Length: 338
Image (tube, rainbow, N blue to C red; front, side, top):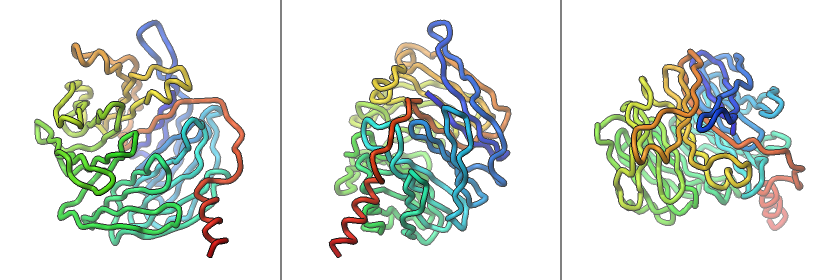
């Protein structure tokens, strides 16, 4: 498993998680260098590829196994706010990269080679977050214009938009794509994906802002933020399943969950959760221990920088890419039909 973190000091940090004396692990550095000209605001990984977006309006790309730099994309004209890869099930390489920016725009890239397929502007103000459905056919965005938008990634256009009345900072699909989670300050709304109906609302007991969230298996949602805790929510009952209190000494800026599908393919432990805080510390936890008692981190690294974001991926062997992207194929088919 690899972890990628971005920092306010413009540095990108890459780590590989390796076994140590049981039960502990080691975060071994892959690379660390100043890749952007402005603070890094978002990172994403998929298989052996990673991407970072910054306030310098650029996206930078990396190959994790070789710890090498692949190049940059300059198709945006404002700060990047969110990045997300799409990869079909059971494949270790990404098919597409979807990016969102502070001018309300979204760009869809083919991932091999990295070329721009389509740009659209679903919002009038800065996009706060973007989440791609597991099918790769649609995405949700929330922005400072207090709107939730649904994007048709096949046709490259906005298909739905509704005013929320309040600004949402995060939006995440669950692993199955049947539900999505939307964060507003210290509250998390659990919604039905089909009609956006609110099923229940999760409220931080300390009424502290939620700054990061990651869906897990069996309806579990992990959140972190200004309360410095890692909270696991049972989204079916709307209650806290368990909590790692004081997981960090500063607010959490990123959470990564290793899913069971990744674990099956790579042999990694499926019960690992990684977290990053604004004081530069990255920690890896075995959440099975949190159910019984407050656990100690299995691994820890201190970047001594102000971390802003965290992403993780299982390192798998490279596979040949069979043809062009699924989104590109569907777009070509629609163009031929028209």
